[in-house]
Length: 506
Ligand code: HEC
Image (cartoon, rainbow, N blue to C red):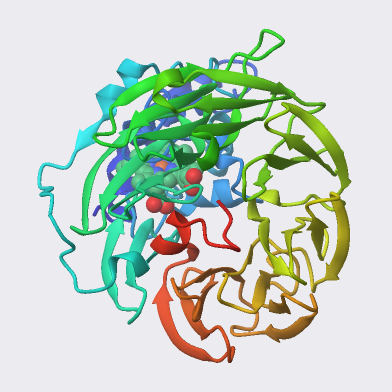
């Protein structure tokens, strides 16, 4: 790996000479021109981030991706580089004004939406030359109780034995994994997607990467068809849904998202609807939902469901007959009947519901759903027959994730946003009261929960660069293990995901 300083030293001489020449030339003109961000980019950044800004050895640098860098994190990254990565520090190469100029340039919109055709996707497909398939797992752990931990701190996934909590493998992912990984129906393979649209296929039994392909330029999440044959990739850029063969990651189809009004739309998310043999798509820029079929007789045909406003993020009833969508602006939810193909009820859901984290579970002999809210410290419990809110559980702040399991008496709810981000509420499924609040790492973000296959243990992330996964006994609520991890975000148990376990979001 190239040490950041040495790299910028190489550039310094050449770059400075160039600037000096330019400055001398400008002295003759009336005003000193501002530094040209595009020119600096082509000189110093394009070799790694690509002239197109769509990424190369470094990630894509476009507003869609670096918009998430808060405050001066962008300028900071350019100034100081990223330790232990190939991203060099430019503090000795560029002036503050030049750093500002190149930062503005990478924040500016791309002149055109990249096309990213099937041929372009295919050209990126790379199967690992060393990969050797295996007939059975190379480990003795229960292959159905494997839990993957996505470590966003250094872009790796740890493969955990769900019984012993031993790390069986730790593999590098593409930069910035986004959305949940998806398992094949037999739990043999997993597919991981990155923000820059790379899809990686990993063989859990062999503990080896099978290959990867760049299915989009800027992507949101993936879903697998119920028959395990197809993987759908929801793209922001371009305005498409990419359909890949799960076998070899080859492109089956690139579906343009042409809207009812004649424009095109980003796809906010794609979901698998197993009972319907279809994918359901949330469209960001058009008041419609798409259903894309995966049954052989109508492969990749789609239908539109008109809704009153674009819906961001979905919760499905367990039979996949209905979905609740959140309308970001209006802070309401709407219930859509997938069979009838229309909205059937409104739900007042203040404080931006995070329906993608909504779960359903049994309470008082009845199946209910619950959802956290992104801007209010409350969990809404919803009756799915009458579509009314039956309970609001006040929490210590807005939460991001909510989880349960059919074999556990509790719901676990984090308090991701605000000063109490180090808290984790444990809520009794019957009384719907908070029975305990954990505080395992004061001052740090404690978030996201996954259970082991049997529901006996709950795994919680300390979401920090020097973080950990804490293993709790899900009944006594005592800590049993603490595994050091680099900013662990999501955790995904093979069994809970492939069986659509109660209390898991999908
Ligand atoms: C030698 C290759 C290389 C060069 C040259 C380079 N970068 Fe990078 N850059 C990277 C890599 C690799 C990363 C990912 C680092 C990580 O893992 O966090 C990165 C990350 C970044 C990020 C953070 C992106 C994110 O989404 O978190 C920014 C911003 C960035 N580079 C800007 C620049 C700019 C501006 C220049 C030119 C002035 C530049 N880089 C030159 C390799 C490079």
